[in-house]
Length: 449
Image (cartoon, helix red, strand yellow):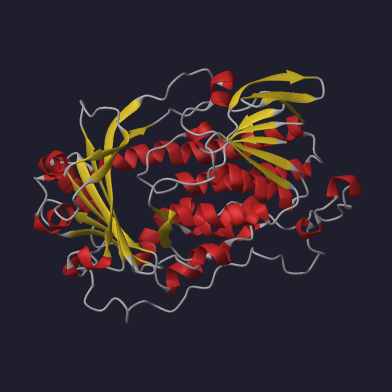
């Protein structure tokens, strides 16, 4: 199988397939495998997927296991949402919530792929097109034609593979512009060094910050929604451009925005859900299939879930990829599309103003932890195919040895034996000692529902 794209989704797909005994070639158009971007939030469903891929211990090395999810009113400074991420949360969802650097996840997946004899990595190879033939697909690349049993388009926002299957052209600019920066911990205002993923919500803007890499850094992302927001991608932006856009926020979030000497400008793009991702032995995965806004922090998690589902379907269909891809699409379409749509709607909640802002605050303030957990259950609870990824179906016989050549490390465990890398992560000791003096403002007392 050929996988177009060596980002998080492509590498996860290759690793998941290898753990089910399938060979793959990952084609990355850049001259080396790497990941741009900075911080990323990992909810419990993402951790279940990472653990199932066998790289959980690597990702956890630099992750920060935060204590709260906070939504603050950017105009008034009051707390709107306060979700505790304590033992109750970990028990409810089987894994903690953490923040880390995208490069740390990508590097762990890359190391996992390099350790697999069934995965071949090719950088500097761009997928140009493909043609379906009787025995599979011929992938047309910058290095020549490459015959394969199947093709997975994990080639991101401007997917060549998607254009052939869906044909909906360039993804439109969303009007949501992000300004990103990474601060050293000593640069972060002392009274905002909170052990939380914090979002300051205001009219048509929001500001997010959280610690990274063992409290050495803080990730900062400021987003503005406006009609004329340009089309920049990873371009430098001076503070003089950024600060006026957020000036209606109160002093605390503005004190963070004044720190960076420069930001990186990113235009967000979005696609509407589509009913079909698949054409015979060719399918889509991750952003290529369901490009979404970042307001639920689930883009990477959805790509990881895609990868596990696709590999599980390929295993169930014994390598009949046309059937497997249809089953994968049927299984994933509603969940991924629901997240895609819900993320867009959550952006409207964040950016509310006037009476809508007051309604938002009244709806969410003072909820108990259990009410927050109930609202998040559909999202943070991993699907069955993620939880059970390493299990072999009862009564299944081993596959032919020809497909297993060189894949001893990818064999499914014997019935009743623990599968490596799929155990729910244990939440590390609380960071309360390390985070003294960084406490978030107290939540308002719970009110009667």
